[in-house]
Image (cartoon, rainbow, N blue to C red):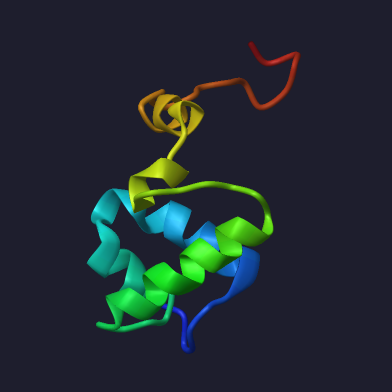
Length: 84
């Protein structure tokens, strides 16, 4: 879902991380910056600096754990412990 107005702070970080696989232009749109990629990148950098996270590219937000979780497949489990 696209934000109705530009996100800031940890909200822009969360949105950017969720959209990182789609590229910087798509992430900017999703985070409410439309086609203004430069402003999106500036706000993202400032937000990351505030929480002491260093990023050079949008892809730096995607961790190895995120990639593993995404490629994990479908988890199948019983509804209860008794119904195996």
